[in-house]
Amino acid sequence: MKIRYKFLSILLVISTSNVFAWWNDILVYNNKPIAQHSMAAKSNGTLYLAVPDSSAGMYSIQLLKSTNDGNTWLPVSNATGPMATAITKTKMVRTGSDSVYCLYSTTAGVYLLNVETGIIGSFTSSSVADFDAAGSPAGNVIYLFVNEPINFTIKRYTT
Image (cartoon, rainbow, N blue to C red; front, side, top):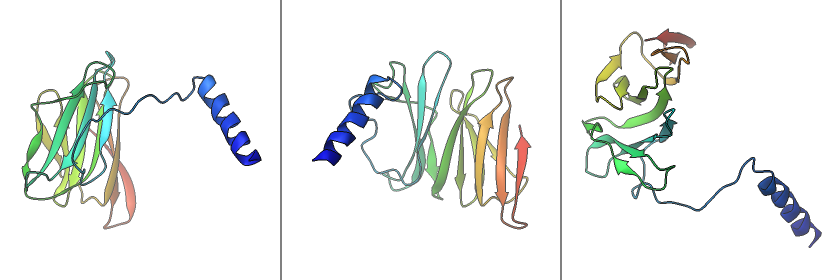
């Protein structure tokens, strides 16, 4: 009984501090993602979500957009697919010029999708075991950190 009382008092302190106040659940996507999803927010509060999908029998990234704090979500017309190879990871980034990009990897490589224009580019400088990315706060630059399996190193590339 004492353990429950202490646990509840800790939760009360956290929730009253407004540091992490979680609200009601909202269904955003009704299928099982095949890899990690990711999200980015523009400076005006618009949210973009990338969900790796295989529900139509082929692979794609479903892009969703919310302009009301995530209460409702609509598909973005610049979704990828169909693709022949599975998506293994997504990473959404926002640059200093407020552009939103979805980086994603497949067994064929790493790709870069401008979420708002639909333009797709590919990273071809090296083979990739894993990656991470960040947008520059000073301009329309993306930093790509690549785990290269051939020489077991991590290198930084920029757009």
